[in-house]
Amino acid sequence: MTIQPPTSNAHLKVLAAGSLREVLTAVTQHFGQEAGQPVALEFGASGILRQRIEQGEPADVFVSADLAHPQRLANGGCWTAPRTVVRNRLCALVRPGLVTTPRSLLDALLDPAVRVGTSTPGFDPSGDYAWAMFERADAWRPGSGERLRAKALPLTGNPDSPRPPAGCGTYAWIMQEGQADVFLTYYSNALAARAEWPDLQVVALPEPLQVGAAYGLTTRRDAGVAAQAFAKVLESPYAQTQWARHGFDVA
Image 1 (cartoon, rainbow, N blue to C red):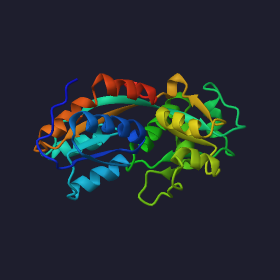
Image 2: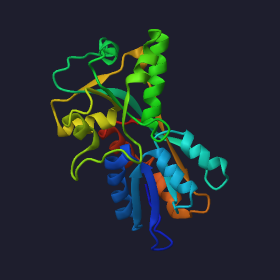
Image 3: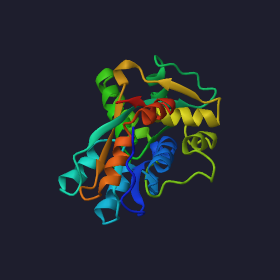
Image 4: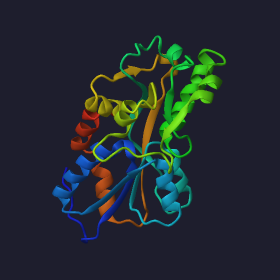
């Protein structure tokens, strides 16, 4: 696609879900080269980023790992109604030595000896999706959801969550440090973690437990043409290729 040049040299401020770090960095570099538009790109848990915007932090584009957080901004009137730009899905990242298949995954999760890590519900949609999976588990095997909620360890997505050392991915680091035996996370995150530590297993959720994630894109209404151009690039053929390469499901 043809990208129009920017109307000024001011940086475009983009806040995006942490699970988009690798793919959005590549897409942003492409956008900058094509449009000559400088972009300030920051990542974090979607709920925390939304709070920062609500508290007055300037931003032009917000890409959340769900639709609820950008919709909350849109409800205030200053941001556009969110649209789904890409999809992801929840899976299980499993430590080496714990033999698990989709069919046996729920039994493994319910095992008292197995530590189950998640992100933090409310702050990070990944944690909300994990809780949605627990509800599905309750419908499939009554009582299991309550047991999973009681044992789940919210290891990421909170403002106070420990950070990995520089150069280490969050999920590979958590598993290498032995903080969890199974971590429920996005498929894209799991692939990135396995690239760092190939002995990790990536296990799909069985059909009754499957939970999808829709990533919502919104722009500030007065952000200008650069923000609109960036939003369009996220749906360009180049971006579609990058989404797929990093394990996302193209919307």
